[in-house]
Length: 72
Image 1 (cartoon, rainbow, N blue to C red):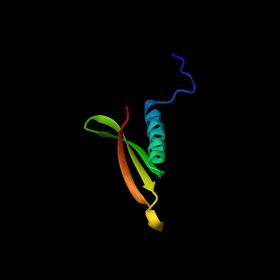
Image 2 (image 1 turned 30 degrees about the horizontal axis):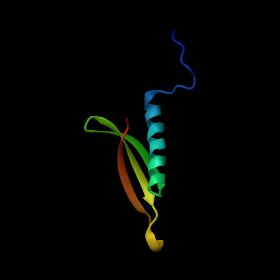
Image 3 (image 1 turned 60 degrees about the vertical axis):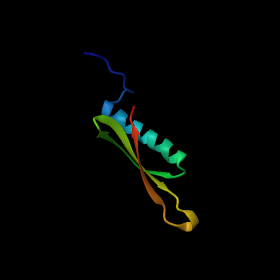
Image 4 (image 1 turned 90 degrees about the horizontal axis):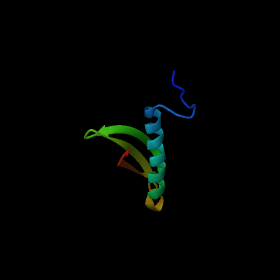
């Protein structure tokens, strides 16, 4: 039986955690808060769909911004 290191996760979990990490970076770059990060497939390519809440100006409600980022 092959031995698997305990710190290795399945590819699906890695993709989800990668999307979350990418989402945090995107939110920080846009000056907002990460609301959602999920994996999807668009055009046959794996992508991360990131939803960021960007604070509104002059006390307005936050804007919801959806950003699609290639997973690779």
